[in-house]
Amino acid sequence: MDYVEGFVAAVPTKNKEAYIRHATEAAQLFKEHGATRLIECWGDDVPSGVKTSFPLAVQCREDETVVFSWVIWPSRQVRDIGMKAIGEDIRMQDNPMPFDASRLIYGGFEMVVNQ
Image (tube, rainbow, N blue to C red; front, top):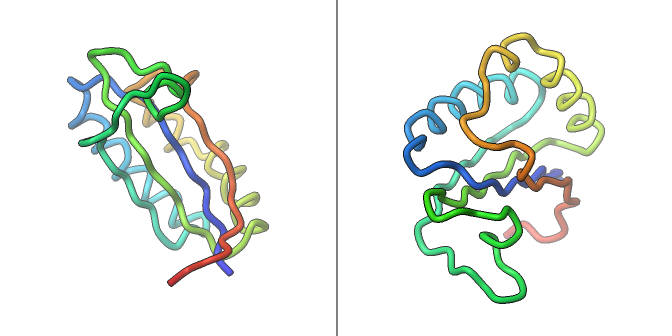
């Protein structure tokens, strides 16, 4: 079954277009390095909780929007090799993130239901 790498970040709302450009360019690199699909979502109805929430998790500020994205890979092995290659790819280094990456949350997930 496929493997999923998930991401949550807080992006300055004013940087929405820059973020979309960055994500569109990054999607091509991810696909070149083995990903089958990349989905980027701009927060629209993301409530802030008291104990837990997406905004709390990424320390989202009032002038920022939460983004939620995921990359689908054929397997964890392909993801591990692909992510290493992406990190070393000069094109990714030439495509700076339009947000504070220190508050980015990410992780790999084994897909258990896919309907």
